[in-house]
Length: 170
Image 1 (cartoon, rainbow, N blue to C red):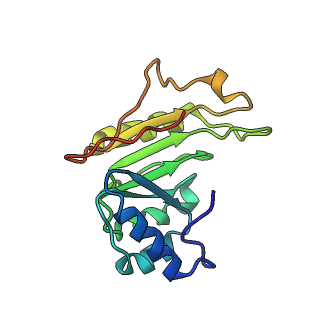
Image 2 (image 1 turned 30 degrees about the horizontal axis):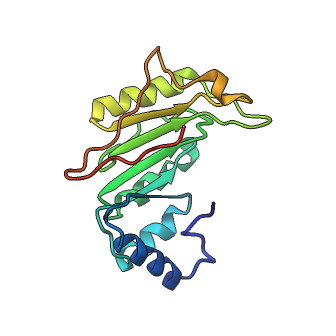
């Protein structure tokens, strides 16, 4: 895994990647970056077909500015990946956002995720009519913690006419 919008990745290479994605309309590509300012800067120089979904990582309130950058991108689907969620995200401006994915950190020494943070994001999504996907609670043994929030699996995908939702690995 890498970040396509890292400063060391030449624009020509990014354009080549987009050309391949544009040539494969039968596939859905979910591109995720933490480098939202570069994304916003070069987005006008890229060809955005409907099968390219663009997202930014938003793990806590420190990086909410990434959402502002994402709104400038002409992707058919714009999404937030709040994973690992390491802090609350109150008062999200979800205008122009189609999908929010939330998950806890996993691995040897994961930082805890507060259930109230997840519930708040879910409620904000529902109020804004934004699809909400809860991926995992995380933890050292993430599968043991499961994926249910208040006894429910939240597996929403954004609607895109004539488009089949991609499979997401748990």
